[in-house]
Length: 297
View (cartoon, rainbow, N blue to C red):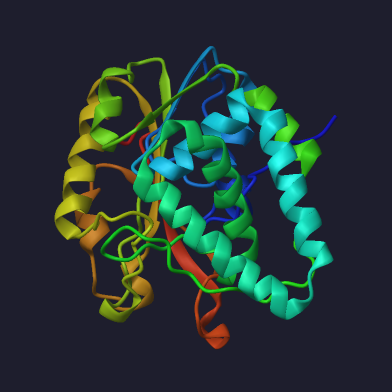
């Protein structure tokens, strides 16, 4: 049996931290919600381990959710599109592939701007293609909402992982998907729900402020509003685990999250920072796991 795993690389993806997050899973999960689904490492892990009856995933990134939706409902056609892209890529020289990448990036941005639902399949295929062939698998947009990450010079990217896409599709059949503000998930969440929250991280420094997965920003004001949301769903009886950056990596006196989540359990775990333009700045770093699972709230 194929073990499903994220079909894209995503900044802040949680594959490497699953063992620590699993320690916070309840013994049973009947209902699951992920308001910032991203790459879905925790989602696919929960789906395979617990097979919850009700699942809601959400993200502000419309193109990301469209890709999940195409994998759920139109997977074989998506595989066909990706197979064609993979064949074309393999048939080209390196310089041709560089031009091919920028041609497809331009086409993706056109589709993104057009907002034609009849083109959602092609847009999803290009979303995956660009993720596999752009620098570090980043998803970054400019102020106009246009994807602007450069080519990664990959020689032989694995553009069409048919087995994994089919495994993901099977797991997603019972999953409800929405696009929008995470606060809209509140009506779904009740005392039976396990909620994993992986928002845009608070930057450790001003120059490290990479939160442009969408056209929206996520400042300290938004972090505080998220803390209020987590407190409110905790009061409803939901079991909650949230991830975020650890400000103490940059300033040992920065107690922003320690104060914001003073009524929750805060665990510091070690992660590898894989996405940085400077390779020397990639490496071990502390992150936060914030939870009410231990009954601290």
